[in-house]
Length: 219
Image 1: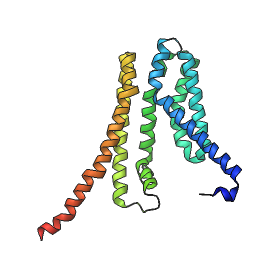
Image 2: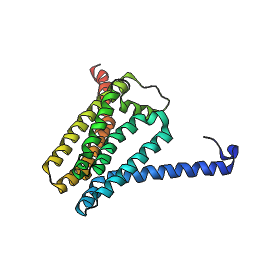
Image 3: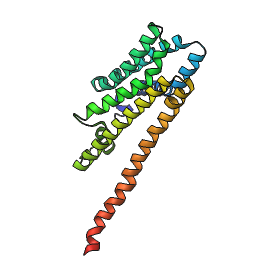
Image 4: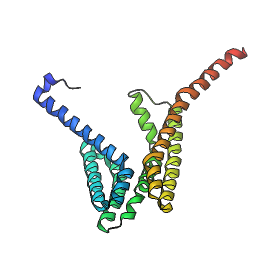
């Protein structure tokens, strides 16, 4: 990290202010789109869907630009994943097809599925997360194998989640659509994340201890 004394306090303050602004923007956008099904529900009921769709499309475009500015080339895949749902919202607003917007969660699941699935050809996304967490340590073949399996597990999850989201659209019940896509799907994500974490930290650890102690008991 560069000390403020080396680059000047004024420049350092500007850098910190810029980072704080970017982080605030990222958090705000995350909250907006996490609550998107609920706000879409209200906008539809109160006849404000067109305004809401335009606002959502603009915010998605802003998020894509923000990602490109921050991460450059590394953000291209994430920006692409954002673009497809954004195009749907723009078309919904331009063609005055409010019902199209309810396919937004379906497209989000499809783009996440495609992103995770395509990463299996090079370096699985979960392996990249693992490399970030262990920093400069070498990634063992066991970790590579495990993270690949977890990435495949998330692929199955996104496929199932997208199918259920699609069913809620076809069902035609706005409140059911909102409940699943705005609440239950997040609960499912959290359950899978916590379940995998518990399995990795507790079950695998216990199994490794049993494996280590087995030779001792046999002697």
